[in-house]
Every structure is written in C-alpha cells, then in structure tokens.
Image (cartoon, rainbow, N blue to C red; front, side):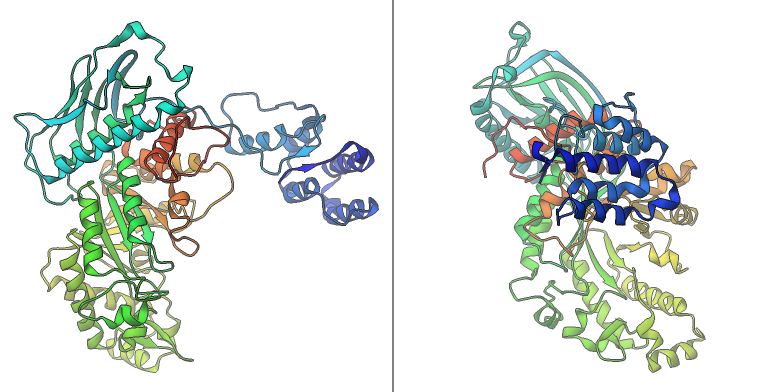
Length: 629
C-alpha cells in the first residue's frame, strides 16, 4: 500500500527529509547510530509507527554510495542522473526507486517500477532464427473458412492430425474472443495494402512420423506466408508442430470478422535440443489437469522436456504395481497419487505436443517417504526414522531393480533421472552396520566412496535389465568425485542465481553432456520484474571450446514445491519461464531485453487467451484481449 503524507504533517515531513540529508552526509562511523535516530525522530513526532519512508531508507542505508548520495540530493526535484538508454541493472534499480520520489508528492511507493511496453502484434515467441516480415503487406484470414491440410508428398500420422484440430480450435477461439474489444487502433491502418485472404496452410512432412520424441528429434521448419498461399515444410513431424505454433502466434485480430497475418518468411530451428521444465509433485501434490495445462504452456514456448520429479522425502505419490505400499503408506492420501493410467495419459498428452516426459526417482538421499511402506531399504538412524538407502544390503538393490524396471516400462523416454543430490552422510556415520560394511569394503571413513559404490552398483543392476536407457544425475555426483558412464547427463544446479563455471568445465572436460538450471530456479520469487535476469543467461558462456559447447545440450527451469501447488503453479512459472525458452531456442545474439519486451508482453497476452494464467511481470500494462475466467 502507498503511504500519503498530508499537508497538516508538514513539520513531520520536513524532519524526515532532513533526516535523509543528515544520514547521507554523516561519516561512516556515525551511521551505526542511524537506527536510534530513526526511533528518536519517530517518537518525537508522537507517531508510534515507523513510517514507510524511513523504513525504506533504513533498508537501503548500507547500499548508499557516492552516486546514491548525489541521487538523494536531487531526488526532490525529480532529476534523472542516469539519462542514457543503456543502464546497468543497479542503475536501473536505483533510478526507478528515486524517480517516483517528487517534491510535490506526498506519496512514497515502496516498489516503483516502469510501465510495461505495449504488446507487439503478430510477432512470435521465441524469436525464430531467421525471419523476414513485411508489416505493410497484410494478409487476411477468415477463421470460419481457414483450414490446415497436408500436401500430396507429406507423411501423415495421429500427431499432426491432432495438431490440426488443436490449432483450428485455437484460431477460432482467438477470433471469437477479440472482436468485442476491437478499437480503432486494432483495425488495419492500411486497407489498400490488404491482400486476398489465405484460406489454408499447406503442411509437408518429409519423413515418416516417429512415435515418441527424443533428444535427437529434428524440430526445424520453414514457413512462408504470401498473398494467397501459406506453406509449412518440416523434415519431421516435431518441426511441423513448432511451425504450427509460430503460425498461430503470427495471427492477430484486424477487424470484427477476420484475422490478419503479415507477409513473412521464416527458417527456424532450436539452438539447444533439451529445453525443459522441472516440476516437483512430492512436496505438494499437483493435479494431472494442472500438469497438462502446463504442457499447453510449454508447447506455446517450444519447450520439449517435462522433467517430472515424482517423489521425495515428503510424499510418494507414484502408485507402483510391484510395491503398492510405497504410495499406500507414503502418499499424502489415496486421492493424491498418480497411477499408471493417469501417468500414461500425461505421457500421451505430451507426445502429441512434442514433449518428452522424463521421470526422476531421486536416490540415495531424499527417500524418507519410501520408508513408510518399505523401511527395510533405508538406513536406520539413531533416534528413529530412516536415512538414505542402505547400500550394505543386497535386498536394497534387488528392490530398486524391480521398481526401476517397472518405471522404465511405463515411461517410454530413453532417459531416467536418478537424482543423486544432497545425500547426507550423518545417518551412515552413526550406523554401526554401515561402518562395519565400509571397513570390509576398504572404504575406511570415506563416505564419498560409499556413495560411489551405491551409484555404480545401482547402474550395474539397471543395465542388466537391458532396457536401453540413459541416466541423468544432479551435479552432486561429480562434486563428490563419483565417476559415471560417459553417456550420462549432468544437471547443473548449485549456486542459485549465479554461474557455476567450475562444475560445467569439469563435466564437459570429462566428456559428459550437461543441462543447465542454476540461474533458472523459478520457485524463488521477488516482487517486481525479474524475467529480464533469466533472459540474460547463456549456458554456453562458461565453456570456451567448440567441443565443450556441444556438450551443453540445453537447460531447465526448476519449480520446487515447498510453496507451490495447483493454486499458484502456473502463475509462478509463466511468463517467467518464457524468458528461458527464448534463450534456449533463439540465436545466441538475441539478447536485447528492450527489443524483446513488446513480444514478451504479447506472448503473455497470448497465454491468457489460451487460459494459461500467466502473471504480469513487466509492470503496469494492458493486454487488449478478453480473457474468459
């Protein structure tokens, strides 16, 4: 809430402004007394509350520099001492803070932010690799008559047929929702340059359809929209899906009955092959409908991997047919589970949208919920309760082989995430049987060797299943000096919001493929605009050789579930994850936030139109679309 200082409080206001001046001029040795000064000023005016203005300066007092001192002298007359177009992030923050503090205003906004850029019209997100468009050459489309069709040379399958129906419904809905809000600005301003409407998009798929997407899937496509014809060509069906998404994003309402599209030519392909979202469904149960709605948003952002962190310490919602007690005793409730039918529906939903479903069952740590149904596989800890998996028992590995065999049969993706993060050694250290086992194995007191033994034996057992799977691990495996097969994938996550150069270099030097997540932990939320900091991250910035860059196969945005459930999952994730989506798809030189913001705003409006509750993230603005609740 904003705080208003009325005219009758002139004296109090004067004292507070003079306090700011006193503070910025006082030597460093006196600033430690500022808290006492604040309380004194507050008490002397008979006000038992600490004014928000004083709290604001109390918050920032340790960050005041010479520049800030100069700012504090000039803020009362609204002087912008950062007039240049390009400002550092710090300058942008402070300029925004002080620009709202005017001498003729008695309102102090705790978090002043700039106004969002007006949404663009008909520009796709992520930005294609090569795009030539002519806004002066406008082509109309009548949604009632428009259709998608396959060329005579094209291959066909259920995936492209389902996509035609899906995008047909989207275009029809877009035309129905927008006319009520059509204004003079949304009517085409160059009626002479309108061309005869395009009646169909002809699609050609060169190769037979793969049943399920993979890391090696070809998502490239070519899209040409001319005066009387629109053509989409793709090597595989997965590229056709991405091209259909681009085509739908280029449409915009131009009058009360028709939609418009600019004459455009596009050659497009993803920069990275692995572009994902990780959802945690253990700390809070997430309804399958929410998972599917998130897949809709992923499709709109050309993301292709749903990393499903299914189980963890808190709950075990996966319903195993081999071991039903895992969910019967480990889930929050019988209703908060995922059986094989529900999981198969989610996998199929993703397949039709070109999205892989990559399951994660994290071990040897993060397994307390496993112990509710099968305590025998966990290490006994002093004081009760189960710790990490017990690597001293043969039965532990027999149990895991049976469980993972079931999981591998259910999930068709070639990759299984085995976790490996944050395994605490405290329980192993306090267990006499574990220490005796380590002595027999010659590990001494090196618990990293015990963890390496666990990982290597688990991999040996899983490879004996002959399911032709590859494995993904969190970076902790490398941190602890554990050697993994060269075909493994390492997910980089530590030092949140920073750039973990060392581990990336270590992984790529070992010839291991990597997926970057460190700067994209989206469960950490700050008030205000933050998509730009996610937009300015490049996973290959930290490796220098061409060979190492090729081993960085992509990235994932992670949404851990401590404070996330159905009520806020989509709002927290979108459109912030869209920033990462463009970074992983578009060319490396596409980095200008100012140029991207109008498209970012349009894309958020587009998601709202598709019933995805994407939150505003650029400041005050308007979508100019009608969103049905």
